[in-house]
Amino acid sequence: MYDPQQFVAKHVAGLPRSGIRDFFAIVSQMKDAISLGIGEPDFITPWHIREAAIYALERGKTSYTDNRGLLKLRQVLADYIGKNFGMGYKPENEILVTVGVSEALDIALRAVINPGDKVLYHEPCYVSYHPSVSLVHGQAIPIATSAADDFALDPDKVIEAWEPGVKVLILNFPTNPTGGVTDRTKLEKLAKFVIEKDILVISDEVYAELTYEGTHTSIASLPGMQERTIFLHGFSKAWAMTGFRLGFACGPAPLVEAMMKVHQYAMMCAPILSQEAGVEAIVNGAQSVAKMKEQYQRRRDYITRRFNEIGLKCHVPKGTFYAFPALPKGFQGKSMDFCQGLLNAEKVAVVPGTAFGPSGEGFFRASFSNSYEQLIAATEAIERYVGSLKL
Image (cartoon, rainbow, N blue to C red):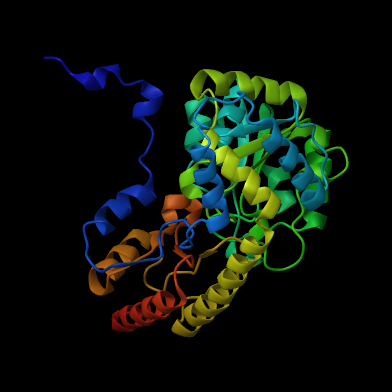
C-alpha cells in the first residue's frame, strides 16, 4: 500500500512539532480567550512605515532586488549598527537582508555546519534553535540557564559544556522566553573563551532595542569578536513589523557570501515592499520604537509584580516582552498541565516552559505584548485559578 510517510526524510520525521503552535491550535478554537502566548507586538506597524510600503507599491516597486537586499537599506543598516552597536560593516559585502531573523539563522547554520559539527546554545531558548541545528545535521548541545541568576548565561557553564568538535555557539540576548541578559563582563569572559577555542558565534539580537536596564552590548562589539561573529537582527519586534518578514545578517565577507549563496537559491531576496518599509523604519523609526518600549516596560513592571503577589515567583526580565514565572508548588514537572488547566478554567493562554526546551520545565511564558487592560484581566484570572488549586 502506498504510504507518503515513507518519503519523509528521517531527520525531518524525527523533529518534534513546535510546542507553541500545538498549544495555540487549541487556543484558536476557544472564543474569548485572553492570549499572553504569541511573541508578537500588539501594536500595529507605525503608520509612517506602512506608508513607505504603500508609497513604494504606488510607484510600481514590485520587482526582485539584489540578492543581498537593496543597497540603500544595507547602507542605512550599516549606519544604524555603527551608531547603536559599535560595529562597522561594509554595506557592499558584509550585510545580507533576509526574510526575517528565522531565515538568517537557518542560512547561517546551513552555510557553516558540516554533518556532525557540534553547536552550543543556551536554554530555555527560542523554539527553533535545536531543530535548526538538527536540520543541517549538526549536533545541538544545550546549556541550561536558571532563575537563580535571572537566566543570564554563565560563561563557566559554556566552558564546562565545551567538547571537541564544537564549531558554533548560538547566543540570544535579551533572551526569548526568559528576558535574560548576559552583561558585558560575562560576555568578555565568554569572548576570551571562544577565541581560545576558535568557535564561531551566531548572535541573535532581535530584542536588543527592548532592553530596559543598562545598555545592550553585542558580543560582536568586543575586541576580536566581530571577525568571528554572525550578527542577526530584524524588524519584527522593536518596530512591530512581524508581517513584513524582514531581517538581516552581518558578518565577515566570506561568511556573508556563503550565506548569500544559500539565500539566493532558497529565497532569491526579501520582498521589495518590506525593504522599502525597512529603510523608513531605520531612518525615522526611533521615536516609534521608544514609545512602544515605554509601554512594554510599564506592562513588564505590572505583570511581574502581580505574578509575585499571586505567589508565582518571577524575576524581572531585563529585556524582551516576556515574563517567565515559576509554576506554583505542586505543579513542578507539569507545566503543560498547568497551562492547559488555566486555559480550560479561565480562558487565559500562556505557553508551557517545556516549549522552550527541557530546562524550561517548571515555568511558563507570558507575553506582555498585550494591552494593559488585558494584562489586568489575565492576572486576575490567573490569581483565581491558582487560588482554586488544592496544593
